[in-house]
Image (cartoon, rainbow, N blue to C red; front, top):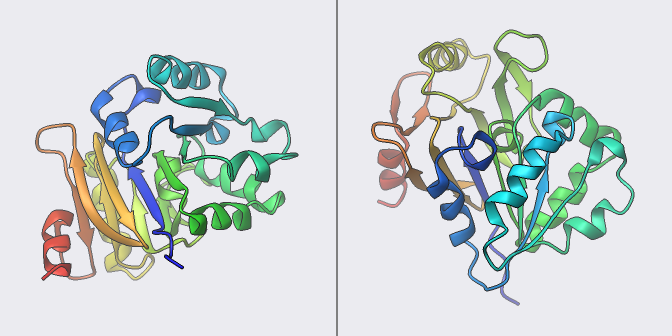
Length: 231
């Protein structure tokens, strides 16, 4: 039996929920190699914000996709059946800590894990990008940028919005001090494709915006790191 590739696409910022970088959205859907893609949107991190949900339908309505969303803040009944019927899940931004806490309360991490291992593409922006990692740099728990535990589908740490120099410097500092493991910083307007937990491709819709691999000793372009991985 052929094993499904496990795919996550993490977007640092931008895309339809930010009304920008339309090619980021195209990059995500173009990774799904089939027609009539079934896409599900989760606005959980924004407390099921209706405007973001409306933007989702507006963005994709003219294309041949099956579209639906799930308001988890209202309850999780039927969520597993909904999720496992999708080709692509897109998770919007907002409060990462509250979203992960809700997933934990409803025991949903194992449902996402089942979808991931089934080969359903998991994607998202900001909170929806970083939740999959072991550790996150986030201001969602205390109001200050600090380490936050993720759900560990991808080892290491991550921060979105690293085109904000204050956030990037804090991420580098937390790794150097040993408070976060080595990890990936993703600028706004940038998507990173992870296959089986390994960074495989960087796509940028903005000039001079990138993703970076940060260790205690160094910060390099993630594109360079991927080239080294592929030898």
